[in-house]
Length: 99
Image (cartoon, rainbow, N blue to C red; front, side, top):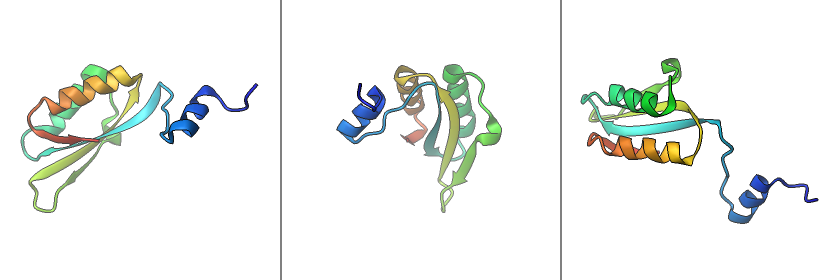
């Protein structure tokens, strides 16, 4: 039997890390400052990932104050969940980028 697990084998073949769910997953959202971005992010995260620990959230304003980045750590349960979160964040109209 091969000493590598299936996850390690795929990672070695593609060069891309493979996530094992559930896992702690940070999501960074960059959007327009002052338009309720923080609360929209929290609402979307809670709707899709359950309760989040706001003490682990970080925020940073751009140098000119036009944009805000909000990073939230969630317990990710799978790719469909992450795809939904990314889509809902982008659909808000105030989110410019999701990482």
